[in-house]
Length: 307
Image 1 (cartoon, one colour):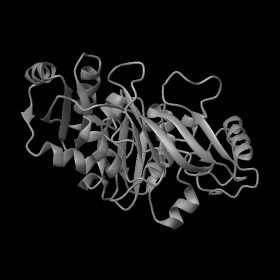
Image 2 (cartoon, helix red, strand yellow):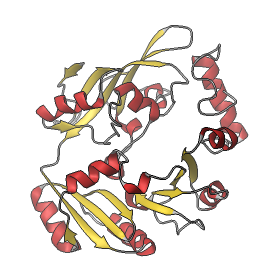
Image 3 (cartoon, one colour):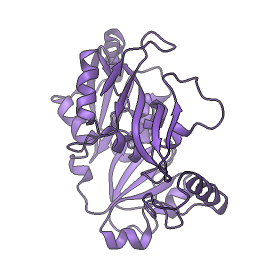
Image 4 (cartoon, rainbow, N blue to C red):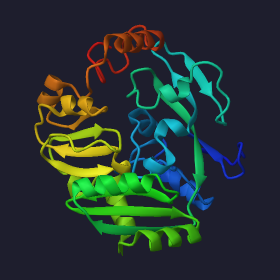
């Protein structure tokens, strides 16, 4: 693993460059020594690597404040379907002229190339953190999250489950203390353990054998679905369990989309994990696939059967 503490456009912004097989835990240990972090809090899932993190495009609880994986990808070294080694991006955010291929790789599931090396922007660890807990039902939690989201509060994560809303405050000590006094609630004991269970999806909310992940506008009303398990990202991410035939229709009706996040293989093959693409968008995906992988040998059918 290579760590280069180079100042980008802001004195607090550094970057880290690492080989794709480097475990996320190892990268975070190096960053912690420098007081830095991967701000999007990727799940580690007992050994996840940097390449897997970027290819899957999964972000953790802090995504609502810091942004997604793709927002932190500065550059990638990629081996395409013909065996060519390609370099995209660099070490700063404002280095792209034309199509930003390095960010395109985030969430591509290995369908466009083998990730050899990644450069990510990192951010300083917060000086102070505190987690508050509130007893709220689903509708009240969504309303509060949207109300708080429009205020200058240092909210770095939110998680609702079974009538309880956890809210994490992160930042300068004075800001965290002031926000805590303003919001009320009860201070959570073992907050780090709680947020780690959300990040690693070991929390009971994620235990269902069939799990749907709905990305919606944060202010969207409750979908007409049973089985709500959790709400994250200020109301923008909602988890449901069960065989929900109308999950995708409901998500589309509310201006979002639904992913069949976990299910038996037979169900995934029948329904597909991702919502079908409109014809124009599917054609764009197919052209990208043909450009990077003309022989169609890289994870064919991993995202959609058409490529």
